[in-house]
Length: 555
Image (spheres, rainbow, N blue to C red):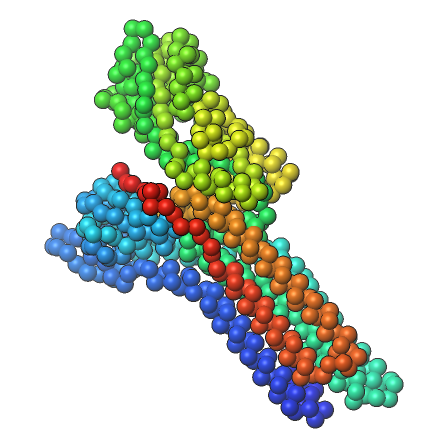
């Protein structure tokens, strides 16, 4: 553009040079404003953290800067106040609106033991909570950091635009030089030097250079507003290609709040004894089913030599007896096989308790399906996306849960390695997303086209293990996010096609003198403005309203 403007002045076309400079500057200004607008979502997220926080200390309440909050500080949030950092409620009950963080528009009831997130708005009650993160390093700042990083990691279309633009500039300079030389050879240098300058403007890849970045920044920034954190431009583009979604069951399709709903004891044993022995071993486990057993047991004796066998269960010694607790696949339920089968048919997970190689009883645990699961799966099917369930649970239980959700293809009794192998095979057939908790399903997440961690707010490890993280648990985010990505991908494609089409049309018109410098500049810069405006459309998010009955209730 600089060469063209300078050449126009030297040739005496000062008005056209001025028009070129003005229109180019206008387009650059619009481009800067477009990028700033696209990044407003990130600045808006950071502004959700209040400037001050109330901290409770031995000497009383003190107001400090939110950035000075440290982990384990005891903070107080009054009615209508924003929460300064992540924490766990110690006293008080209230409703917390975390819609700007998780995208779940219904306020969540919280009480002692429940988590609260930085940037959430407290309801009508007063909460005292213990900070689980510093004021400068919490779930909200982690989200902003990851989204900022996403802008630097380019996807397929961004790399395509770069591959075209990088050689195009030197090629155009050489072509313009050859056109000018041709003018001297045939004895009409003024005409052909002017055409060379017009060609420089006509083939300048400004629109091509901005076609993808403004779309990616707009789309990723707007996605973060409704609780979808996309870690790179490449992940965003791949998200728009997905045709199969594989779901983990526990904690993804289900609430991850399992409870004991049935216990059967073998002859000579009692239900209390079965629960007591299971609780003794499960006390050391972090598995969700362990929490349910501990809550149901009236006592929990100490256990020695406890060992965990991944995908199977636990072994240990309780009151001098060798105990095994695990799935029916690992421990034969023997005389209680009919009860185990009946539990599975009702959607329960079964835990078998064995004492000295003899079955003592079975425990039925049920983790209820999320209320929005069936709606989310139906939305995916309406978009032409295939759904699959992968779970370590037994086949009957898995099928019962899958039937309620509307998933027809189920792979049960899967170890983590089995899930990863299935996902790798699925990826060979087509783009596949795996949705899990981001930690236990890490092998499958890593093997998928796009790994998605659900409910990853506040867990940097969970966010880091996936390409995309949903900060909330509402499964309706999934079809919304896939539709958003497909729309953004289509906008990128349209922008690249338009930029290349304009170059292809303007080049011969400039070369043969059909259009002069001013006309080419006008068309060129109008095209860039159109590309920018089209890219900004990617920031629009069409989310369906969440029904009032889809209410999230705390403990």
